[in-house]
Image (tube, rainbow, N blue to C red; front, side, top):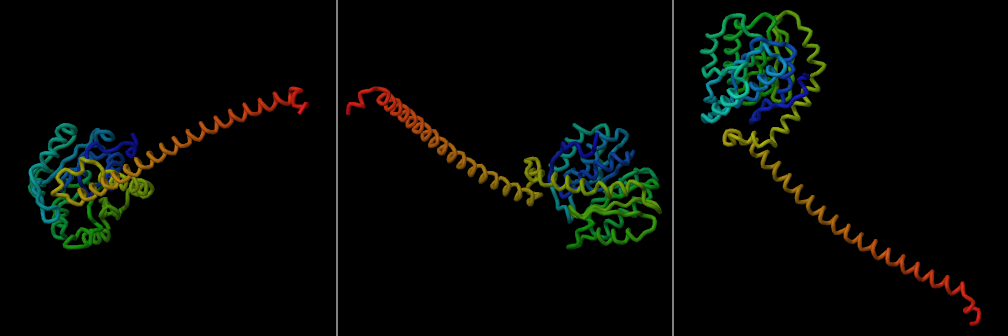
Length: 300
């Protein structure tokens, strides 16, 4: 199955929607045995890996590590978030994934060295926090494995992923590529030379980005992406604006249909009058023809 040929089953608010096709493509291409995500929140990126594993990579197993308590960047949120993610995971992805409700440091103790093929780091985004996560989990990665860093293109506030990403691009033991849309996604593969799939990714990246932007726009309109609105107000605002636009468009369409119906009625009346006029003209012509066909008019 082509990784671009299916749409996500799961829907929730997220700034990760624009990268979902990239997750699908990478799982299909790399066929990783072990995927670990640090920072899951509403679960859009996690379930992108899970759905790709289900359909495209049967040997892949995905772990999600999060306290589901929030942080300074994601904000604090209720137990509803974990319950929703846990419920969907248990129903649809129980055989190929697992939720680890713990801190990143605690979870690292349960993974052996050189055991992870694909690591997604998306926790607290300060320079200190993301640098610590990388240092702590780097020994857990297999040679030639890949690390994803979200928010490499966010440069306001105390976000510092961009600064770490700049440093990684200068390291000879990491081969880096980046897409800057959707807050930025850094892709770093361990090794002194870039793998062939980096070239393949560069070729397909425009299509992946375009599809990701489309998924992001669709997500804004989906009712499922409005749950937890108190925790994710921007999506609720956009959803309300979209609904207002649709209501206005439906009102204008209804008015146009009414005007069209009236025009069709007037046209029908005009056609009836035209038919009557044509019938009268035919009768008149027949009467004239009868007069000229007789000899009585010559006597006048």
